[in-house]
Image (cartoon, rainbow, N blue to C red; front, side, top):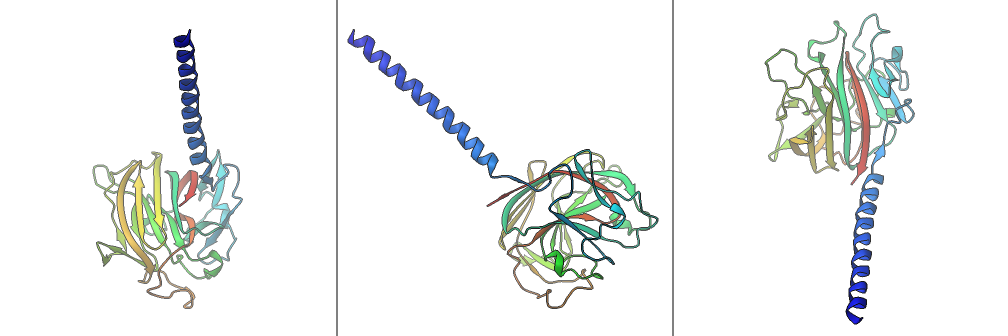
Length: 267
């Protein structure tokens, strides 16, 4: 009888421990999931604001940025000409240290009067200056860019998840990158393929680019500096100033593209 009672107690303890372990794992999964914030609700552009070169903040010229079938589109079907209307759609809150995830694919739209380098080319800007400080005749925001590219010529390498630096500088191996764009180690993707991009940013220290789950580039110490951007307010462009935080923006440079599953976890 004692052995039976002892065995019964032991079984009960194991059952409780097992349930506790399962509940703990379930709770951990729920907690991790709840840390992610969706930046795009899949229905409209609430929380986002556009800024186009030659236009005032908030003017979504020709309805370039729009939502259709649960994705944010950069769509040029209302354009007669591109007219150097470089555009960005900014989320209305700055971030400092975070993990950003998004998915993208290009469309077959491309404005032929846009610069040739914009073909199957777009990007996600981060650590950007505040949208309200971007002047009407400023071409690009002072920011760092997770550059998005797709195959241009079959068989030729064209990696995605690169880094470009409009009005900024970054360090690679403790040296300022000499070039405006630093290529990643990613493979080349077809233009109409959905690709998963990730960006891990630790304030003004480490930045990591990820493509389809693989790290493809890392660098550090983003700061204001360099050229490319023009028409800015000199009071904003303080060369050498560390970029500890900033805004996230989706780019429109004459090439159609779609974005979805945009979410962030602050670190």
